[in-house]
Length: 450
Image (cartoon, rainbow, N blue to C red):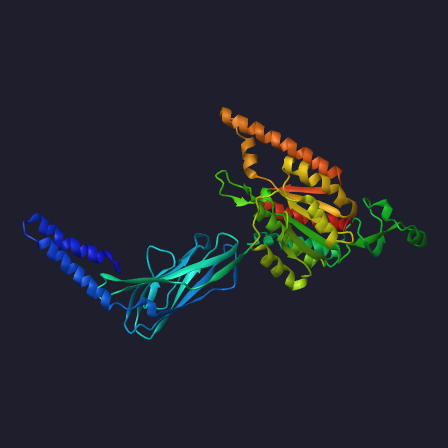
């Protein structure tokens, strides 16, 4: 039995005057009357166990987008159902009250996913709850709690029913706003736009007259002799190349970047955004894209998806990927690359430039990969470190600034070593990593290195 605030108020109305005036046993009599009334109210309440509940949840939704969890409640108790029904979800699901259907069901003030109901016997109501998830992955629903009150609203019955439900939260893909501008540049490179570009490629396209600034190695001497004017070959980027994105899910991917109070997003989330934008761009370019999320074992893989199936497969695969507090097995990464890529390909390693992690793990294997493939190492920079470099007001801030500057020097040295071993390096803040990596891909394609 549950007792509402109305029953407590009724008890107080009778007890307070009795305490002010001397009377033998009056308090006990009043209390007994209130309890009796509450018991009668409970007896007249609809049985919550005879209420049928179904939950309808969409299969998936993007991070920070709205979805609706709908409860279909049918009253088969034989009495009018009055009370509150709560659709329980975890905090990261972002549950909030939805819009009910008319007067029979309306959001309850004071709780997310709570609905007041006044449902006659034999009728049904739909109770929507708005979900705005704040984390990727599978968000499981909790039980449905039904509190059925009596006609007086003093007391009632309550039960929690297990009603299964699951919502898969896909990556947000906020970086897709950068896709149109990169696709325009890609069309220019492919010659589909009326823009003349220079530079090397991999497939011969046509001949044109030499202009100042052209690479002399592109001069076609035979055509020049025939035409009696200097002409050069133009090239277009080769299509159907292989692109392998390796997502490091080791312990360094769990570090939060972008907030001093440790409320920023994990480094892995920025890497996922970069992987999605690169996959979308490479897919439009006609290249074959594969993805492997790896630490000491394969956590996720996308193979063989192309065209309109590529991005849904990427989003679905990356939705449940989480960092693991283990050191990444970089020799194992080399094995994965060599198993998947038998021809020369672009291998993108989304990891960290932490000096200790690079020198002890990544650096020895970059040389092996760069012999057979074009390698790009992409890493998320922490904007908090950039803020620390500017502090000079107190002794502690000066110390932090010195430590940040020392860290920058170490990362610069690591970057230099990676480039010496044949890798291209991209490091940017979380919001800038995805477009910077896309620009690097376009630059490599324009230079004929893919």
